[in-house]
Length: 495
Ligand code: ADP
Image 1 (cartoon, helix red, strand yellow):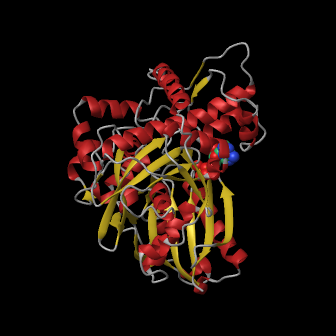
Image 2 (cartoon, helix red, strand yellow):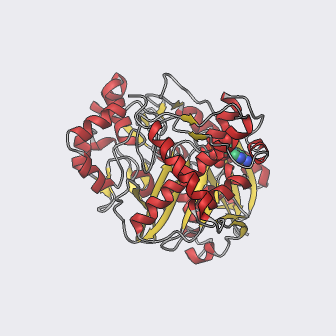
Image 3 (tube, helix red, strand yellow):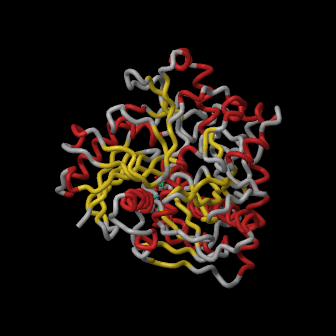
């Protein structure tokens, strides 16, 4: 039996999972690392901690599975996207903390770029919008504000990468500086149609081309791991950003298939096949993967605060001890009693894109209880995703026929039912919900002959439960109307 080691480098933890060739989980290891908040709206990670936690979990997963490097056919990498690492090529040392995708420090830089007329070009070439979410303005900020970074660039020693590049660099003992198309596509520097770094965009952001990694496909042998790390070399053969990996792991391999991951944020992606659809509704267009010489594309709507809204009930308000308790608490009331929570804590993502929006809690009355808040929080998550579903249907001209759900908060049955009702779409939860890591494992296994074709891996997908939308739309329509009014109140608040 063949085995694959998947590294899943997430926003709050590094995980490593060993899968067998039926797609079943053999061993899991996980380590959290520090979240660094230097100022309101700023979020950083220590790149050394990311690498050390990832290496430790990989070794632990191998040991739990009772396997050696020689038993592993391939290694796949999936990662938090857009997060920026800069390091010195000569020493391999990071030159600053990683600036995390959630970081809002470049909101004004984005506004400046928009005001000077750059938006249409970025939109057309990258499929993205000018928002601090993406890597480009973060990298430009580092080059402008950190003398060590600027000097290293001038002296030709600077390497830039997203987290996948940083891990590959370390896994190969500094021999390989590379990334895959899905990660490259989230930097604002990559032309998704020509599949290359784009000189005009680099110039607009004042980024020197020499610091960029080489771009490869999502499924091919990149290199072998340095033999001393795991007691022998393992081929690194699959790389994709976390959301694209989850789309692959959910076996959404045909045009029109969609998945939503409910973690800290929520990410809805629809496979659009060989066509890069240009959104009229501020959704993102990105490569889904490049595999066997062909690139498939997806439309994406990202919601910044999803499960994090439940975390806020738990840690900020203290009305829950654990996140899963939100379900039982919300079930004690039949509705939110007119309360609406717009969890725009870090601005609003698709389709609103307002970095200045902030959270709003409206409709509170004397009878409002913690249970109403819990229900409003779950509804707030589902409403945001429903906004993305309608934008996606309008862009693609295709009605979403089913949405496959995964991520920590997909365990919440009430949330899943609210989602089906509010979006008017059946929501299917698979048996294996480790879809992100699984996607990376599939991509790596396809490059090394563990599986022959994408159809082979799709055959492993099994449903656990389907949540059907309520046939009566009137209640959902009323809730949606109230939501839209509340969203207007959240917009533009932090200006
Ligand atoms: P990430 O990969 O983004 O760190 P996970 O997929 O591990 O996130 O999901 C964790 C998030 O999901 C947390 O924000 C947590 O509050 C939320 N969550 C976990 N379980 C539940 C649940 N049963 N109901 C609601 N939210 C949940």
